[in-house]
Length: 480
Image (cartoon, one colour):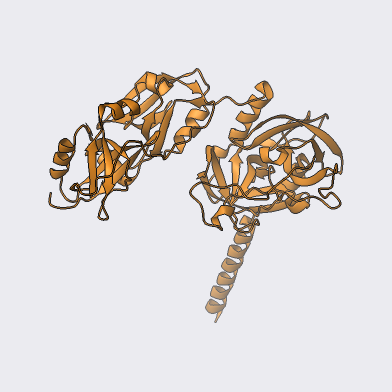
């Protein structure tokens, strides 16, 4: 009986110790909020009435009505009480949040929070209010730097987002729906997220409850350091759904430094159009695994062109930084100062090599066109090749107009076609097992196809309008 009682006592002690240990690992945010909460501010603006359709921004390729709400900004464009759109009556909006980064009154927030504002009002937790002026904004990263007149103001301290770990606890402080100094917490869900039309920010994804009004507020780690700026949410309703995205603070600090010094942000560019390297593309180009950024085309006279970078090159590294995904390249190049010398590692025709270039400055976004070249007449009665398409050779005049030496125009695409091609596409190059062949004649192209196994994987470089892309084909019609 004594043995049983002893065992029971030991079991109870172990159970209690485990329960205490589990209780101890639960986070306590009280000290963090007490120490850092005073540096977080509410931002509202006064704006002259403007005509608005209330429509959401359209995201190319996302036509579904619910998906149109994808990544809606936090701010409901609603007039405040008594501030309706009457003649000459200003519209007041409680827009979002911000945080003080320097004791003399510099504040970071989102660019969309202060966009179009005629007057900016900053409110502290102790009810003090200040008028702010915009030092500069950068829409590509959605960062704004504003300034109030003050001294000895509470300011945040910064952490290193590169040391942030998935699963780590994080805390947001902001003003959702105008409820000032609201604290929410969660974990880091992922790092380095790429979002549609956001090429220059490797977002931190969290499950912290974020809602309209949290925009521009800080995201803290458990040491009370700011590691991000809450910027976007995934939502089909406009409210929190467990997917929130923050701009890493190192990106924001680099932007604010340039805004403070120059009033604008200078970004590097090299003049290439790129696409993701899929598994099939990697196989076609003889690459060990899917990685890098495949160069579709090179702008004539650009830094990449002068350095000898070619279409069909796969960029694997830039300035010693690995390019694992095509989305990595715009971030790396964009953060490189224009005029600097950079080394680019490329995969070309089955071998790795390096080239050096002088980085240019990004002036405007390039938009790929999808128009078919003119002069191509369908010939449905002609025999299709093993891809299920009918091709023809371009005339000298067509080649001159397109600025190419060879190429075959697609005149017809049959129902059993193995490639995602359109009439009017121009085929420039075929890649198979790392071997690149320029296409110059129908006979040559059909001979190349005839020599392939029916399970072969090939890649075609396709000119469509003013842009080029790589199309992968897995499997061919007929024998081989």
